[in-house]
Amino acid sequence: MENTANNSTKKVSMHTLGCRLNFSETGSLAEGFVKRGYEVVDFGQKADVVFINTCTVTDSADSTCRNLIRKAHKSSPEGKIVVAGCYAQMEPETIANMQGVDLVLGTSEKYKVFDYLNEEEATAIHVDKSMDFYGAATTNSDGHTRAFLKIQDGCNYVCSFCIIPFARGRSKAISIADAVANAKEILSQGFKEIVLTGVNIGEYETASGEKLVDMVKSLLELEDLERLRLSSVEPNTITDELLAVFKSSPKFLDHFHIPLQSGDDDILTGMRRKYTVADYKKVIDKIITAFPDAGIGADLICGFPGETNEQFQNTYNLVKELPITHFHVFPYSKRKGTTASKMDNHIHNATKKDRVNSLIHLGEAKLSMFSEDQVGTKSNVLFERRNKDGLYTGYTTNYVKVFVDTSEELKNTVRTVYLKEYKNGKLFAELVQ
Ligand code: SF4
Image 1 (cartoon, rainbow, N blue to C red):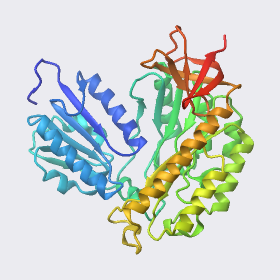
Image 2 (image 1 turned 90 degrees about the horizontal axis):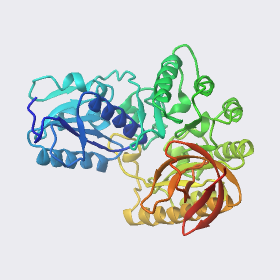
Image 3 (image 1 turned 90 degrees about the vertical axis):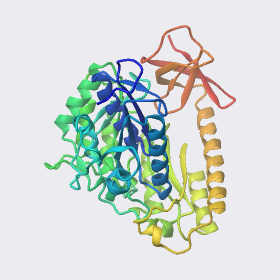
Image 4 (image 1 turned 60 degrees about the vertical axis):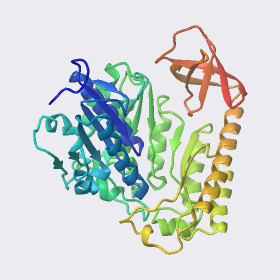
């Protein structure tokens, strides 16, 4: 491959769209590039390889991907442009026909990018429709604090708004032995905290019938592991047995992410979600019984086709009443190929925007209240970095960011703190010696 950079070090720029899983996969691939002698430069800078990890969750995500490809070709006209991931899986020909694109890699092919980069073909498409599992153990962007461990991919559900089952295929799982080996590798690099990721990790199941609960048990036994979190888990997959295992270990953190999407039963039916409002309430109640100070995140979609003001109000009232602390609010966005995109009564953008804004405001108020309520208590914090004001920051077990004024070097250490003041939207803490 021709080297377009000024010096002899090859350069790669990467851009990620979409979900946390995509970000963790890009993190893993970035490490692969670094191991092969590449320098990672900012997207938009001239590079030998431009890698775009795409998303296809909505039609507008598709058009963002195409804009990024144009931008990449402009900034690196002689570089190899690699477009990978969900949009590449769904529409490989559209992407291959765009100017400058060299490689189109589907969701399971993206891990073979290093082999394909050596190919000399003009434009190559590698999309495997069987979409096997390719796992990844990855770091977060600033390294050595929290690592994401991918244990599952794909989804067998058919939520009417979602294209992911088509883009990532049916659910598949890494074996527990492989996950443990990956976890050991992560821990040997000095990581203290692992976050289990996947598209629908509650449905994790190996060919021999091992479930998420078995995976969590095995990981909690690892001596070097200090903290374990789960990424998003569907409410219908939270079992009593799972909660009992979480509760059995101080390594498991009291932080959950349980997608709700809507607080109205008719909308949940239209979305083809697998629970009712009553089921969801029950799950939250069990979590709070087991972990009274839990931080609980929820995804919420505003303006699903046909959503009336009253139905939106049902969502608003439900999340106001429940101990949900971290809101992730999205306007419903059409994705062609999904059942919901063909429904009647699509909601006006302005109405969606108003609903999104009112939930965001409620979410901010609830997170403030949750943070304030913790003043006067202690928590364990994994410290990440010093901010521009010189304060050390990190997250409590229940996922509130704290700020500590200290001269001690705390990066990647877990320390007990006393939460002493909530001011101007920030929770200030001091180290407990
Ligand atoms: S659970 Fe529903 S929203 Fe989540 S990936 Fe599966 S189909 Fe999509």
